[in-house]
Image 1 (cartoon, rainbow, N blue to C red):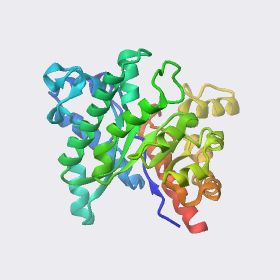
Image 2: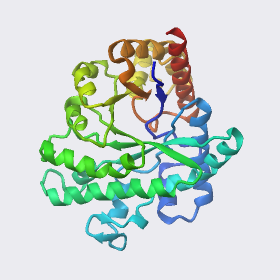
Image 3: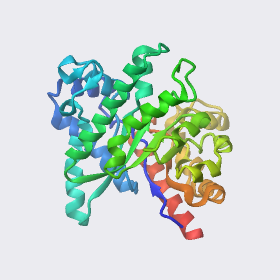
Length: 344
């Protein structure tokens, strides 16, 4: 059996007392970096402590604005929508250098990190909707590549082992006007640096309807599928296509659809669990348990075998009620993977 790697998608609950508004302002003004970096590092350390093999920096910014605010800045662009390499920085990676250095000193090895960047399709749709300008689309792709390239060359105490291109609109957004060749070209350009530097390149899709397009991108080798919450998505995946294109899978083995999970408890207890939060821990003690997670992975492995390279929660945990319950879910995933390996 090939190694199955535990990663996470990125977002994570804020600590008690920190608001989204404060975080947005802290990123904007950069006057409270010490406190902001502490918030980021504490959450990142929790992911490591929970057993995530390749953690993503905690995503506390809007997935579009994090990149668009730099791309829109004329002082940061060589031409419209093409960001300068020196401006293409992901501040969260600067923050986690401290944790990564401590990890290296403690364990004598370099921490493997996953970076998530918003894809060119998503950024384009945010700015231009359904209007089709292929030249601008390609410039967004080059900018995304510059963010990855700069991140790769700037990392000091950690190694970027995986880069995920987040493209939730592919397969879902009816405004998407680009044809298959346009998308393949843009995704190839956006992931060029990551592939060149030897990272696994994932695509994070919210629907696998057009996963076959990603399989045709020579620089993408891992297809992400949110399979825990919607197991039927796997019915759309052709194992032979993965084999023919040398593609692997990143599968969700723990549900993150918190509102649906809370709905199950609401029905069970005939109450509003958001108003009676004493029932919330049952999400990780009775629903998304290590046994449940391990069982899912066994089912998936019987179907796809060594084509599964990464597993973890379906999506980010930013909407979860608190860090404690998010930490337990990640710990449950780690234990579920361990139990799965021991059962083979």
